[in-house]
Length: 163
Image (tube, rainbow, N blue to C red; front, side, top):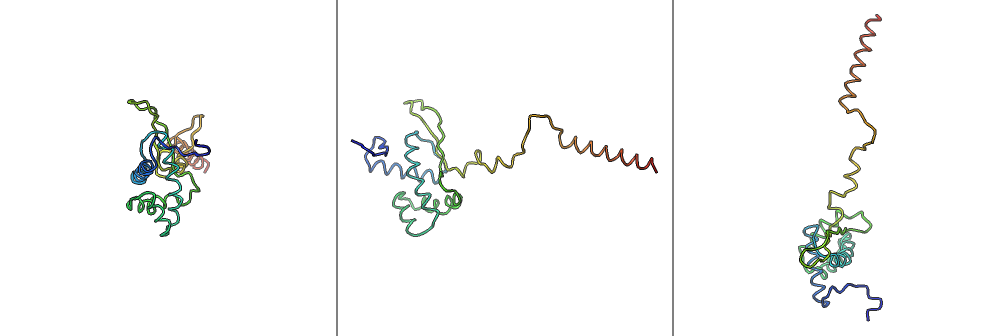
């Protein structure tokens, strides 16, 4: 009985599951996003996020812990050099899971898992730079400058006529 065991076994023995999650984590670190099934994406999120938290502090001990989980020195280097720099100020929630629908062959629910800070589509900083729009009609900037220029010319003409 699995009383209190919250891990999803994914229909695999523990060695196979650990190897699969390590390979998926290396691919995620390398490509910054991967497509997989929803169950694997949720399991991968639980696997990767503690490693990203460890990578914020670049010590030999943390590198050895990451290497024991990932078993790929290039992925560990990318995790500590590239990913950790980008997520250094974030307190958690480094990955995002987006559901993609069902797979045609076996109707499995598919999902995309990605690092949050590497997606420019959903970035808050990108949206903050966008100019705020209203539902009321606004004059365009060229029309406003043209009307201001006309008003200045009229005021100059009136000033000359008064002299």
